[in-house]
Image (cartoon, rainbow, N blue to C red; front, side, top):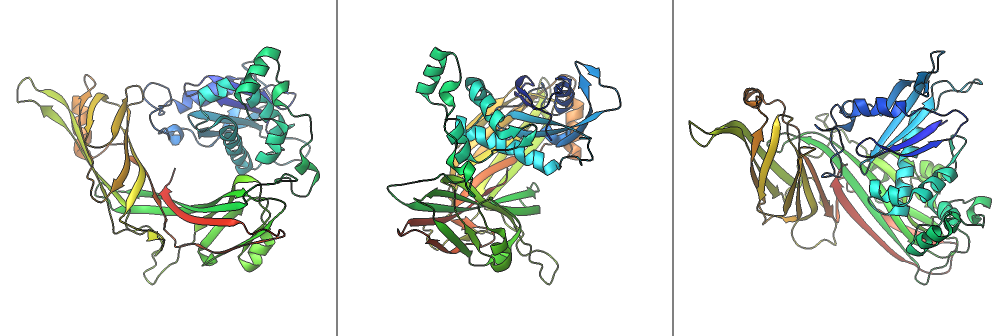
Length: 484
């Protein structure tokens, strides 16, 4: 049971505050969370906007915290505590406060339920406000955000989370709706008076009477690689997870059957409510009536096949991209009068020999898309002057994080980054000693994507449609990308 929900800005300001029970949770818990989060969030107490994935938020804050239950800044007494769940998305922190003891013999709420629901709220904001659903997007749509929370939560429990049902209840914001709302001074322009048709059927995820001039469905098998590499590009540890994203534009009520070339590769999977799980458990096929529009059909982890050596032959042995960093600190510009600082250089290359399996429809050489590198700097660095041969680099003085956007990378390109660093006063000896010991060098974060490629080799062998007389267009592709 969620007692209260808060949404914090990148600087810790409370943007959204919603209480679902008769008890009002004090904002003091937000101060407790932020004081701990800002210890290592960055060096000036705010979320850096340079990287899409800000560093170090959970270095000092676990996803679930236990905090005292306070009202109006005073401890409620009786030793009450709250569980504080946190999720970071698009620079915003979503906080849910849940009581440790719900009374009446009820058990405490499952933690994964709350965390998944917070992600669902963030996904709904992206659907309504666009990507990214950041601070400005929420501030421009305060009324819609509160209406969504009103419909998604009932007395502290998740209720309506399906996009089709929500869009029937609350209209997505448009320019005309905002003008009408500004003139009328109310939120009636974004509310629908009709009850969603799916709420009274056994398929709440699908609207009734759906029609499309062109019937088509697209399936993307997206696999994400989470790996830790050493400075020479060798893989220390790796894990592969996947998801099946679908875009359905099918009329009527179609019944789909999805089969795989090797379903034994799938492990630890979770499904959209439209999937008949008993059918998958028995036959390893995915049978479902799809929602209308984009949705995530399922998530899974790639099963590790242990060989004779005891090591997984599905672990990522060679990454398609290699980044070699070189960082040094010392005195530059001569023996006397030289500045004590640091130098940094990065070289990036695409590797044709990797652990990826390419689709038969792929033509040409390896092309890696959306290549970006997030470079965090140690706390003793005051500023940095960076230059690149390809793309664009932006350095955030407040967060001490640089983002190097390369874009497309092929085997012929050899992007280089070179730069110098100016250290804080009195930190020169510390920098030299840490550099010699290899400490205090934050890891780089490399983002990339390769189309028509897979790590596991999982592919769709068949997609059949029954229950309707038309023959839809069906498209399937594989995508491999870096983890988030």
